Length: 230
Length: 230
Image (cartoon, rainbow over all chains, first blue to last red; front, side):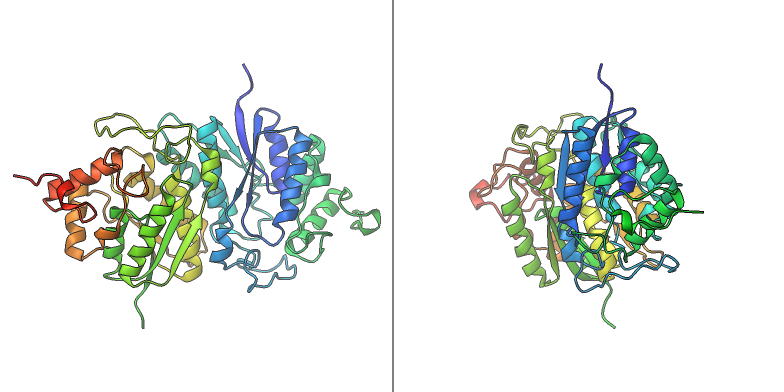
């Protein structure tokens, strides 16, 4: 008997990479990446392919939901909405929020899981550093699992699992290093495709996380590391 | 003050057309059509455009989720799965079931509603003639509305409404005729793009509905009408 199968959503960023590394301890992996017309989608897709290669996973699916660009409303997909400079003390929901985005991702993951027979769906959502996105909260995933229960074949037992949901970025980084997750091929920046802008929410959160973890970010040149603690 | 806005999902078939006609009594309409790699997607898109024109609605969105074809698992999208001949007494879920399909549709509708400020999402789901699809049941829509509540901005009050959920096909047809819904431009067949095959579940359900309603189907030539009742 082979191991059971899990779908892991892999964006190209660190959190989903660490969630996939956790999944790989118990499950064979099917890796799903979704392009949604975001500014950095080519760079993120490259990171996805490098992560899949690092895990040695051949069962991959890249889904394009570029229609989100036509819907607009977010600085990540709508050229009329500017990417804000980092402000981790902002209150409310930032302009990078793509309305209901994770529902699109999970719908694809569930359809794929139902066809492939996967039992679990791993997603790297983390509430503490989620920028206040409503669809990164634990209550959202509870509601989604109820939707799966009533909306799929009766014999389906698919469940979305969120192993990082209560972890801070620095804890996720530490765990990723312990698991040997390929953080060196991940990509977090919202703004650029070549070098991290170090100015968007996502870059600043990443830098803060590595700094708090006391670990150098493997994607930055040694001279650009944040100062270590202490 | 204009009227409030509602998104109506319009597949090209009869049920969603009647649901949109109901919505039009109270709301300005934004019409959403989703292509998902189904065999008859060009014909359904043509029906969508003709329905939008009949309603005089200019605010339309066509979203392509063709990745469902890559996922497969359904006779509607997977060329390796045959379209079954009609069998309305079949038990269990038919081969045309696209796993979790309506979740993809509703995710798009919610994202669009959140950006446009629409208050309601009308969907023509009907349980009695739903072929047993799990995502056509009332409990599924209750769960989805909970997901919206927890997964969107706090000030969002979007709700999915299913005005036809307990109606039989014949009742939907009668209501559509009463409302002046443009049933003459709708399309139901799962099999063909030119003339209805009259052999798939969807064609047979449609014919049975018109027969029970005692109304001729406007898309069939007079000689091909089902016999009227009595």
